[in-house]
Length: 258
Length: 151
Image (cartoon, rainbow over all chains, first blue to last red; front, top):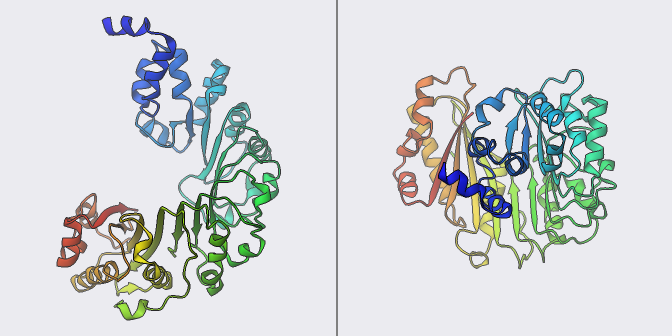
């Protein structure tokens, strides 16, 4: 009790600094929430993992790099009760349902998040063959909301799973992206889309080199040859990509699994 | 059986990368009931590694992640062969240690008995490591870092 009293007498900035060290310890943050609701909520909801697969209860109390795992509907109710929480969210990860049906609650939640800097979409289990789930299979409202969130000036980091027919034109007005990771083909790729890009991860195919554009200032590059390693041109052409950023590249990853 | 002669010959080399600090190359080999499935990408990854000048990177800054997929339970003969193959890959000239060896045990195979999953789960003291003295030594010395994934 004395510790609690002593802590509550500290300047808010100091208390905030203390909680910054607990940013991924959700169990402790939840326990501290009744005492410091305003400060704790800033850290508790800074990074959220919207997952309806039933993993929320299992992992909600653990440390996680993916952020606080929470059921989408539950987080929608949090926002209904405390709309200001939406502005605390900086990173959002959305686990897409493997079986797409009806309206996705994620649309409602995502549309409320206007301060996010990072957005990640990924498929939940059980995985369907990716060829069966295209961008157009997703609910129209959800697609529109994702497109609008990608265009937020605050967005710096985007991670997308393999989504056939994902329109690269969605990146037309996303000039602030610094980190982009896309499973699947991103074609035609041109650095003019991403003037601030510093980190890129893509699935490689030989014809990407043809549209690659001019030299870049990438510091990190990951090329995934996972599903397309039958064409010998890929062996020969990918060094051209690396050559384009040879003077600035610090980290290089080549995934030849097949 | 994969031998060094099958992985010789560099198809391409990387350009000069003066600022590069970390290079990670990820490849795979698959073992099944009959033998291992040879992988063209494995050959390519190995030849690429062999083409790197030894002086280009500080120790530990080139990292190979070798994913070994075991698709079913293996008879002892094939298991021993698998260990030897892994060791041959790891000892291929051009490799810089440590190496990440990620062993995937495919859980959904009907013929994969539960007792093997229990043996493999979270333990580097698994048959695939024990069967080859050289591989065991590399693991014990920390030159090969083993991660077991039950899929």
